[in-house]
Amino acid sequence: MELKNYETVFILTPVLSDDQMKDTVDKFINVLKNNGAEIVNEERWGLKKLAYPIMHKTTGFYNLVEFKADPQVIAILEREFKRDEKVMRFLTIALDKHSLEYNAKRRRGDFNKKDKEETKKEDKAA
Image (cartoon, rainbow, N blue to C red):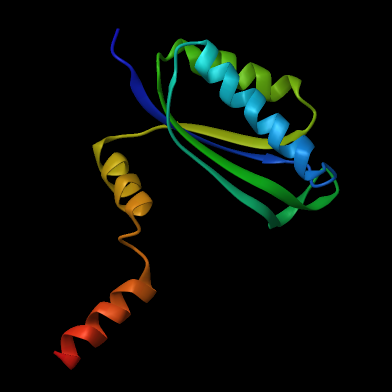
């Protein structure tokens, strides 16, 4: 069966130390790898303010993982999210071709405004 592209974002409780947070993220990545998923991209966005309180917390550690996997792996991953009380929220989506293209551009830094401004200045100077 062909692997599909997915992206999952999950928020961990802010009471964790950096080591605990990294261990928890690694645990979920290992769940994916052990079930035959291929990790495409992993981003740790760090401690961010929540739009609204979740479990009486106003901040959380945001993490994004983009991966290719068999559709059955999603149920296993989400079961692990639900079992772990360190996870406050999670969302997993299937990526279409437009999302894949956007994510590739984002990883390359095509949306970085500072670089584009510098390029424009160099073009004007030349």
